[in-house]
Image (cartoon, rainbow, N blue to C red; front, side, top):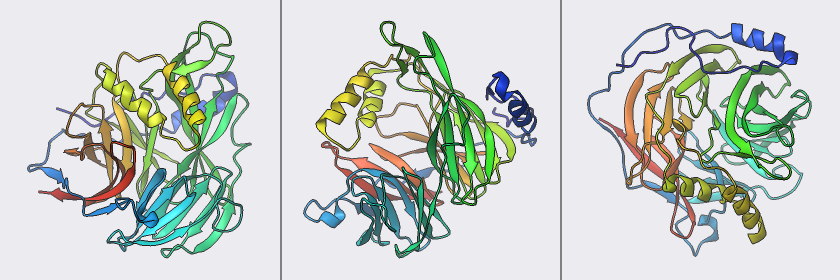
Length: 392
């Protein structure tokens, strides 16, 4: 049997550094728990992702409007329209409910509707939020027209010894900021990086969610000590539903839950486990790391970096988090030639079902009766597919 967490047994290791003493104590004391106890009971019947997509975008090599470059994120409006963040365009592509191309929004530049390396996209009540790497947050209406552009600065959000990085967009349009511990030249041998997560609202208010352990690795033994994370890496995962923000450390099968206002709600365990790393795991992770734009030299440099990473002995427990309106989907490291396995949980941690995703398909967005996945052919050409989810 599986029990929800009834007392604080969180795996989160808050920073013990002296300059964070007061903050760390405040965050730790704010941790509450979900105090309802239950057992893991699978629902009767099977939930199935239809292997045949109902909509496929990117399948027409002769039509440039139906060709995708580097898909970073997708979203679906209430009308059924699909928005795709294309990093090579760079900008947003809008498609109809049937997958027909409607319009492209954006180009490289600094004007309204232009982007400098768009990195995140989310849909908030049929408004599309797009964040680029220089901190511009562009709001688009359901037809793709620009509503307004906000400029966000994160350079001063993190303390000394930490680099501020854009972490993505929360489902209410606020910004998630990562404060990543600087390791270059500071660590010897084995390490585990600390990452702080901040929620920054457009108006400027900042909520500190906490300080979390992230990737593990080791430094080079000779020359300049360059930190290299283990592959597969134990990353810091997060996803946001309409009500909650979910955060997990990949090698610990437990999820922390926060409200969209930044308050700690509780935590729950996930029925997932670690296993021995295989050569296929390393190859899969490596191919995803090499999925970048740019020149062949860029790919060579990244390839050399990846090849120098130490190999982990065991996989993490959790691979990916995705959230719908009131559910959390968790991708595990279970092996299957038929596709990836996902656990569907209620936003209170209640187990609902285990689902097999279509082969070679990464889930980018999920809904009550649909998923949007990224599929690549043997040549690496990308397609976005909409699949129906049948819940018997």
